[in-house]
Length: 229
Image: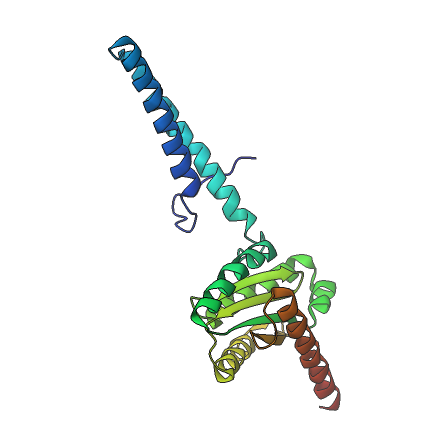
């Protein structure tokens, strides 16, 4: 499968392009050197391959870079997906261990999303998720990772959370930003559960279990308040 390349997309890494370009360049260089050492001269025809093969190598490298980029992205929201998070956590964990710092995992579940889909349709449900995605991106720091974990669930990896107050401020910022939104007269809100690394666990699965438990506790408390209120 080939991907159309958007030249303005500066987030796509150049690793594939650089590797394929250099590989073809050095293969051609060795090929030319071999014939020069064997024959004592270089025929001009030997250079014809460069203007043809180098752009072709760059193009194939682009396809690899683009494919890798989109393999780490959620197709609907454009944010990272589960696959990327699992890979990124390993890198983040290593850095936190070296610096002896802490971090946080936030698991977010969109409240009443099924009602939005049932009453407004799946297309509007997608718009609903996009609206939430944009607000989540506005609510976090540049070093944080926002990902769609699946369905109506989101995940935030937040390195360098040094104390509980920092986490509380982020949670409050997320809730306040979402409160400002309205969608077809539907009140937008999410239930959030969090876990701290390494306090609640040192692997992603353990942190997710704690965050998931806290998230559903938050959701049940919200339902209780709504019932009593």
